[in-house]
Length: 306
Image (cartoon, helix red, strand yellow):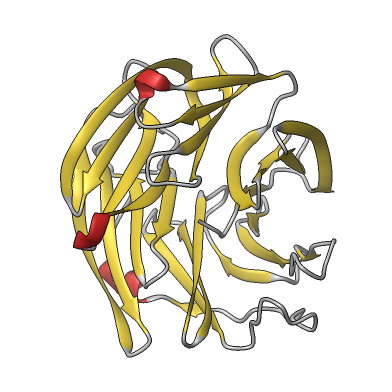
C-alpha cells in the first residue's frame, strides 16, 4: 500500500496476506520519496526472477512524472518472515521528463512480464499513455504511445489490461470522465484504438474512479464515488457498457479509490472526509462495511497491485 501525507511524503505499508492480519509501516519514517504537495500516486507490481517488482509514480513540484522502483529478492509469498521494509531507488522514467498538468491524475497497470502502461493528463488536457518495457537484464525503455482529447479537466483515471488470444498482443482498457461528465472507456489493442464506449453513468466532476479486471478479459469492475444520484456505485461490465450491472452502496466509499483482487471478490481502499483510510471488502457477494486502517489528515492512497 502506497499513501501520501499532506507534506508530500509518499509512505509505504506492507502486509503478507497469508500470515499477517495487520498492516506494517505507513508511518512518517516509512517514506519512499517526496512528491509535490497532494501529488496523485499510482502503483503496480509483479513477480520476476529477481523477486517482487514494485513501481510507484507521482508528480514532483514541477509536475514532471516521476518513478520509484523496488526490486526485492527477499520476497517469498509463503514466507512468514517477510516483514522487512522494502528498499527504493529512482526509476529510469525520470530521465525522460514527461510533464503533466498540475491537476493531472495518474493510473498505471502492468502485464506481469515487465510491460507497463502509465496514463496522465497533459498540460493541454490530453490524456497521454506511456508504454514501458523492463526486464531483469537492463534498464527500462519508455515511449509516449496514445493520446485522447475528450476528457474533462482533472478527470480521474483507471486502467486495466487484457491479452488478445494467442497473438501475444497487449491491450488496455482506460476508464475516465468525458466532457459530458459521463464515464467513458477506451480499449486499445497493442497501441491502436480498438473500441470507444460511452456509458450513461454520470458522475460529479473530479469524482474518483477505480477499475479492476476479474475472471476474464471481458469482465471488469468499475467503482466511482460519488455519483450524481447516489453516494457510491459499483458497475460490473461483462463485455460492453450496454450490459452494465450497477450496485448502489448506501455508505460512501470515500475518495481516491484503489481496488485490489481478494480471492472471490475485492477490497476497496479510500479516504473519508476526515482523513481516515478505510478498507471496504465485498465477500461472497456482500459488502461487509468499513474497516478504519488509520487516520491522518489530508492523506491520499493507491494500491500497488493490478
